[in-house]
Image (tube, rainbow, N blue to C red; front, side):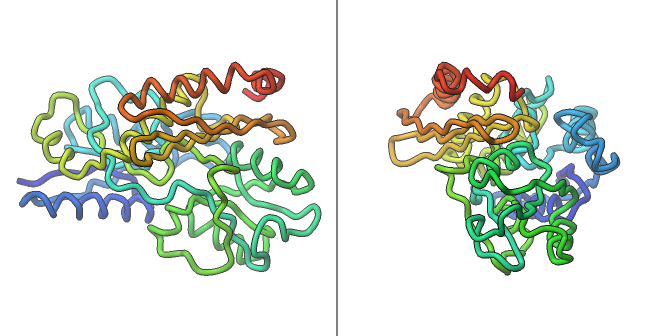
Length: 303
């Protein structure tokens, strides 16, 4: 039996797919074939990506899955829209890596040590707002491209520092150099960050049985809560919002933050729920955040 796995062509996507295949090989005797698929996110110019909308790194792969050209797809969970296409399901989330962001620099150990008016590279509205919430004097400079490109531009001296997902650096083996792990309590990250999504066709019992063997229940519960939070807000990756859940014993902890575009106004929250109904509690966390008077003064203008 040969299982065809759809993924992007980028180095990080390949490493993520190889990781998933490695876990599946531990629980089955099947052979695997990686099918590389170009997506809009790979083809379009960096300046136009934000205009395209959500799903720019998944749509073509998901369409190939629906056509039966691949048997399953592997995505970065944080890139998957909150509404998965009809006919597909999220079958598994393998063990999750760090959901944290990290500040990386050639010359500075942390955000606090940056010079006044220093330049921080990111093209994420969330990260831009969060950096400004920490240091209002810092300037945000656009930074797009794959991890290698971003690190190269940092080494070239284009920025005083940049912000990246720690999980991406771990998978790329690029943890050298000066860096600061930004705490979730202060810098909640994108829903699904650090997690991988295994997507299959709805009704494919064989693929579901296989995928379920590599699913981590804790990671699935965390991600479901985070995505429910984002879905209730009615926004996506272009909005200045962070939400990171963590399962601890019998508790589901949800750390989240809502920001104005310029980061000048924001509100951080931490909610504690019992485990067992992540979808409900993620939505409840969003409701409580939206009902906060301080949030009401700026959030709608942030969207």
